[in-house]
Image (cartoon, rainbow, N blue to C red; front, side):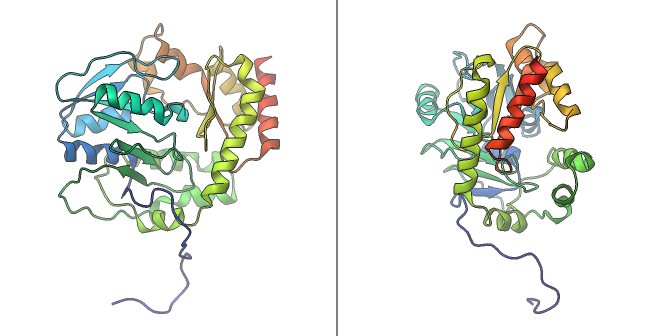
Length: 316
């Protein structure tokens, strides 16, 4: 029986939601798990330059993995796939445009595109593509999957209300106070089964102005690029609705620590890479010294100018 009356809950939002027609799941890694089951994948080539969540999903789902290298252009090195092997392609910082991805799909055939860092880049038709919501928006979970392969399991629906405290706390206080809860939330998904996206997350995603979010991220990326491109070892293209601005610079690890002292938090996205790769490997150096600078919708051009000044000060 439906409840009527009582106290008022969170408002229900009805703005258009990006990726409305995709399969809505509880987290990105379960988008991969869904594909593994739907496609009956047994072997996969994954990049060394990646967090351990992908290899963990493969291990959990009984998929044999092989590691491959990427260059400073974030492209896979030339590697032939074994029979029935799939290529996992990460669209790092949204730097692999759909023309590039189309070439990779034509070359390798069996590819999965990880667009966790390219939320506003629409998928190629016929190419399995995964998106993660919490890297771009104030939600605790959620992912979208584009695929024409379906699993026959009846998926339970996720619930998010118990994961929201770190987001609500950050809204009214500071990020540092609630960081342990944020980190703990990230760890929850290691053991989470495949579920439908929660109603709470879906509702929040219907309340976002995607056009404004996209515009701000694009402009903020361009502002940082104008200020920092001369010292960036990466040759970057413009990023539409950018994830972050990756500044690859000598001494990046030291600069990260200096910025933190001033309340500027720049993550090391994939610390697992340091254990997987030796110090002489490119991926090790990139993981240590790429500074993913924030460009998201919370900030304006004046914030980006301040951030660029602080980075330049730390470089010395």
